[in-house]
Amino acid sequence: MKKVYIDVDMEGCADVTAWPETHYGEKGYDLGVKEMTREAVAACEAAQAAGYQVVLKDAHEDGMNLNPADLPQGVQLIRSWDSSPEEMMAGVDETFSGAIHIGYHSPAGSSDTPLDHTTEHDWYSWVKLNGELASEFSFNLLCGAQYGVPSIFLAGDAGMCKRAEQDSPGIVTVATKHGRGSATWNKHPLDVVAEIKAGVAKALANPAPVPPIADSYKVEFNFSSAGRARAASYYPGAKRESDRIVSYTAKTIPELLTAKMFMTEI
Image 1 (spheres, rainbow, N blue to C red):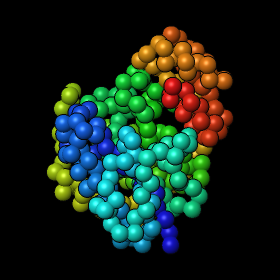
Image 2: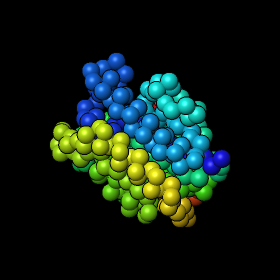
Image 3: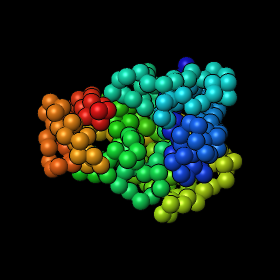
Image 4: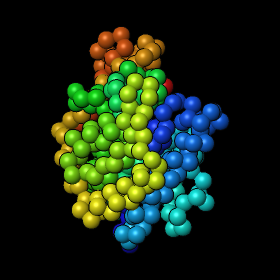
C-alpha cells in the first residue's frame, strides 16, 4: 500500500492565538489540542480514503499532545522525539509518496501571526536560509526532499501558506486564519476540516514535485541571547557574523539539518 507522511504542529491551527494555548497545563491548551487533533484527523481520513497508509508525527512541543485513541484506526503515530536531526520529520524515508503538513505557522521575524517563531519561541529574532526568512517548513521541505519525498499539502496561517507556495510550487494549501498584531481572524473549525479533506484529496491526486536541491545552504541564526550566539559559534565550521548572528554553510541537506540541531539545542 502507498504511504503518506503527516506531521502536525499547533500554532498554525485555527483559533490558536496566544502562547498559553500552545503549552500543556496552561490556559487554553485544551482548545489548542482539540483543534490540532481535529485538523490532524481530517488529513488522516482524507489520505486513508484515497487508499494511503498514514504515518502521523506529533510535532508540537514534547511531541505527546495527541490522544492515539482519537485518531482513525490504522494510523501509525510517532510520539515524542527520536533525537535525530530530522526532528519534526522523524521517520520519513524514500518509501513515502508525499508529506502533508498540518498546523504550520509563519517564521520568526514575520508579521503574519502573533505566534511567529522558527524552531523555538523567543530564541531567535529570525532565521534565514540562503538569504530568505526560514520557517520550520523550510527545513522540513528539504528533509523530505533528500529522500525524494515531495511536500504536497500544508494547512496553516495565511502567511505560511503563501510562503509554502513560493518554496514548493504546486503544493496545495489551506489557510486556517490570518494574523493582525496580537489577534487572529479564524475560519470556523468545521470549515477548516472540510477544506483540509478536499485539499489533501486534491494534493494526492496531483502531487507537487520534489523541489530542486541547491548546491549549498547557508543558514543564519539571529539569536535573542548573546550567550546562545556565542555557544553556537563553537560548532565546527560556524561563523560569527556579529554579536548575535551566527551562520553555517552546508553542502548537503543532512549536513544542514545536523548543524541546525546542534547549533540551536544548546
